[in-house]
Image (cartoon, rainbow, N blue to C red):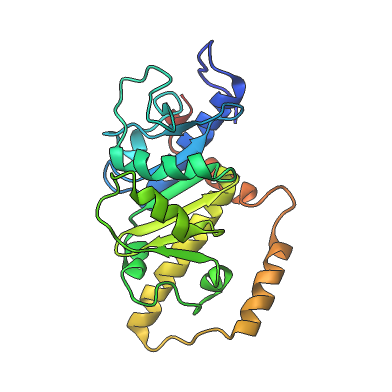
Length: 252
């Protein structure tokens, strides 16, 4: 992504991360995955220990730009002099994962209708479609404890997540984390599709679950349909081209 207005005291790596994250917020807005001024996508700042970027609390996703993202540390201190506040629930939830999980470079939390609907069911995500089969055995679950502003809930979030990196927050929404933003984006897109199809299938009739042996083959072979440039990279780049055709203000 080309630099548009990087501040003199900001590293090229941070500016690139800011542009990537700002693009992601605009992409989410394009898909209708925003939730007024709430929910969060966070991204670690490259080469800086314990620093990550988060959306300014009070702005719509369509108003997020590279320069107005807020840079904070895992203790909640603003590091870039931003005049914007940070949502307390977003900080509490995301900081615990950024603090304890070295591979959680990008974290996505959404309240999409389909994601919340599936999270509110006893069964959770069922292996009944192409996308859901990719997540079989790979989703963690965490019971609803109210709005996430109490630090002690973080211990239970980490314990319930275990070695998995996708979580259904029961009665609440979804949580996706990955080693890169493009990978997290693709996982979110697939999870959203899986949830949408499950909601539609359950309304249409009795869903048919995919056998475990077929799921194993499916998960084994999925890598064979990816371009060799990194998980989610071509998908994310395609969406950046799409939003650029209508509004490039996120780059500033």
